[in-house]
Image (cartoon, rainbow, N blue to C red; front, top):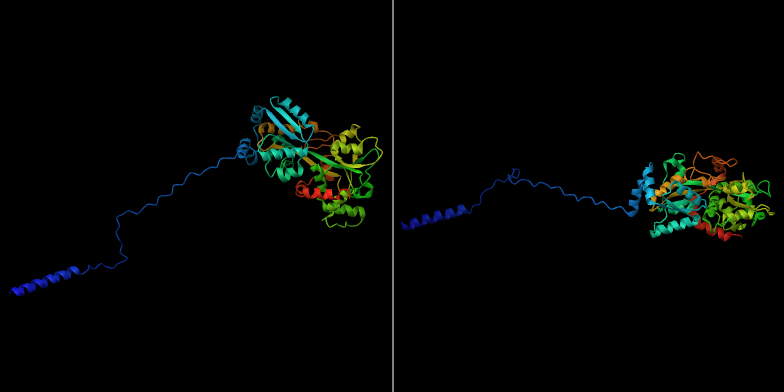
Length: 418
């Protein structure tokens, strides 16, 4: 009996252990939603750092303050400009004209609170002084009042050494093309001229004749090796190959035969002109004395300034431009006025530009032979009008001259007098 009881207890114990060992069956339903009481995380937007504004450079600050360059405006508060100019009290002008001193005196009479130092440096030295000061960061000059020509257009302006400023009074009477890239203050005309005491008319009709033997050493010119303006005028002739070719055919009846070093008729003329030995002089006054002094017995010609006709009218010189000369009577150039980069007296500079482009300010230059972009200006009696002189001359090719300046200087020097 006891044995049977032990057997029953053992069987029950084994059954209970087997039941505990079986795994629990979980329904295999992957599509059933799983309840999740934890709220979903909310995406927090990234906090953007405030944009860093780079401080303006000294140049940018100067431009912004004075409304020049990219901050330029076409209208100006002249009462504020004048007050600021008087507070500045001073003005430095770099010019290439002796008449600038008279203009400075008139300016100081009009604005007695501003002292003007106007320097007649000559075109090349205006360029040199401005460039060297800018490169050194020695901002001293206020006004560029000079030609500059090729270097101004090809180098000075692209480097932002001088800034454009056009007063409303000038803009109202000046064609837009005469305000770009800098305001033009006046025009000068270099003309081929002859001694009018020894000749009733110009002894040549075509500038190719200046390459002929009879004119060897008998043509005077401001030394192009030392005067970039004169060299630019010669380069401008080379820049008109089609016109020079037509003039050659007109004179000689056949097309020009080019040399290996002359790509076209323009450069061929420059080569032969140099080979014919034009006589160089240090300045314009010396050129005029050499070919147009009253009482001379030998006939010469020259490239001179039409504005020097004032001396002819006064009896100090005897010359006449070669009107009707083929293919051009001469070369038209221009003087510019602008504000030098980071000028210490920018408001006085603005006031100067307004003054110098007015009838009062330009008076020292308003003589026979000089022209102004002001459409209301009336030339003196007997002077060619601006339209007339433009129709018979070539505008100086400043960019072309800049691009070929070194090449042309070497080319001219190699061929000079050969």
